[in-house]
Image 1 (cartoon, rainbow, N blue to C red):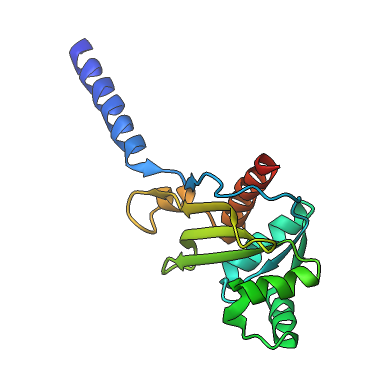
Image 2 (cartoon, rainbow, N blue to C red):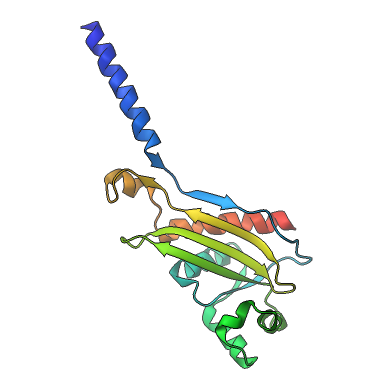
Length: 178
């Protein structure tokens, strides 16, 4: 009887270990800043094409005290300067944005899973005064077992949770640079 309990307890522990190693939370990979900005970042524009995740990150940055210029307004600023929206990260685009008091641009490239949750993202903030990347991260959503399983749903972050985590890491990087 005692041996059966030991075996059963051993199996439970073993299954628990396998279960925990089969799950992973979201991962953030930070880069070292390529350049330090001589000024603090208070006004940031969203690069057109940054998608839903970019918009969600910008809301979180706004909630943390930054002034955010949405992608439509950024496109309007570029158009008034005679530039196309893809020229936002050119020296002329940076100059047009800087003239309007915008310190940096936020660019987001993201991949969504079939269920609409973010799968992964590459995010960078570039200073308009010199075109230098001042904060950049890559982010990957968590997972847990079979896609759609209860554990997978527990481990994966939805759009707002992902944006909150990414914005928090960006703010840490921006504060670290200055």
